Image (cartoon, rainbow, N blue to C red; front, side, top):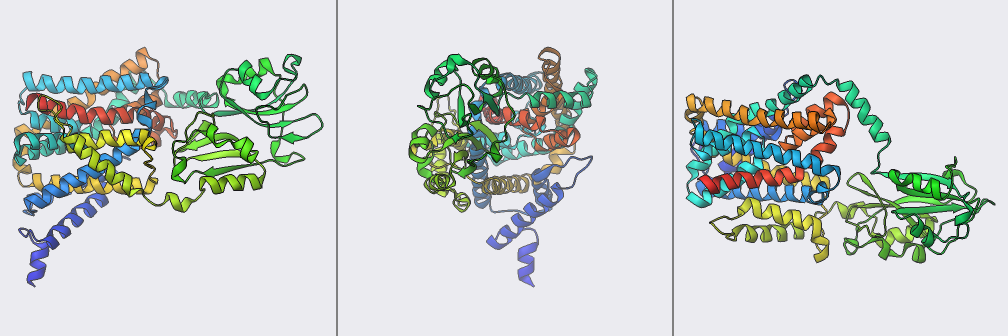
Length: 553
């Protein structure tokens, strides 16, 4: 029975017992994390608490093995996060996203200011513990990971990293609760009725100017009679596609740049809703038209881009009309419809909507791939090339002893690759299931390692007066910036409450709070705001945690 003792009892550091310990911590943590209290669960973060419990009970892992698993899990998690947020990182600064991101940045700045005030004027002068408390208070595990990795490089001491993990664990539970409490406080201060906010969002969604808008317009303006499609683009200077044209005798064609329009023609136009009035003033009025039941059928189909050679290729360079007698109308990317402008560059996984004859559509589908099986194959070359480049970047001394480290380096490289990788023929598309698996595996390995390492001294460090102050200050770090930013967003910027809920969840990168916001409103407006601020927030949380360690440790 010695083999059972070696596998299951504390003290053993064999490979088999280590694997059993990690498997149990991760499995139990994920299972318990699914339990909801008042509709909120801690999710995968419970792996940390199970690891702390097992460490407290005396279970240990060889120091070198634990360090490797922790760092490897961190790299997998951070790199997957970078690939996820990268495509939206730069676009999040456009138009309305600027205001939301500035509010999120304000919240991050307030978090840091409160930490500095506690450090200089409060009763906690251990910056390692404070950064851990801050990371837990804002429910940001990557920030904890980056700070731990930075302080380990600076001091080569596991004790400070363990103190940081203990502060994180102490502040995290009230961090999740504090976000939801802040939502209620903002709602009460401004006497907001959720039903009214939902109605306003639905009304605004009906008039959305971002999604492609379809028009059926009859040409009545004699001044444009005889104009070609190319000339029409010069007159109406905006992005639009005329996918079909029906003449007065019922003949339907797919127009090209040289096609002339005449009075009585009916055009099917895809444009932004904000530009619809231009077509009414230049061409004529809307008409009721069922394009799916016209005398000569013109088919509309979606084609999946799965061949890597078309990653980053502009739609205009496909020569769809000349080569295939087809028109592209929309591109669906990650669930969002985009207008198929000639300058729009395709990405792996895009679904491009084209209209025309079925044989021509099939020919284009063969060219672009249109193979779901191909998308299910992960692009491991890009992932590991990116990890190599990330580690190299993270190891470069940027001056004053500052390095991006094993957290910041892969994060920056992943963001850049996901946005510009096509220029180097690197396919960064990863199916949602593969990306989620990579991310969850990495974070579970990291949290299990951190918990097991910190568990031995957790009770002594937390269950005392110092630990009590960690919890108190953590709650202050959580709730004060949320209330301030929420009041600015509502009182000054007049932002919809549903958007504020998403802003608060996204600025703390907190999925449980987002789940609460979605469930309590039955609307996807919180998720839209969450995804708008998430990329920049995730990046700045990592940088802020590292900067505090570099400046004060």
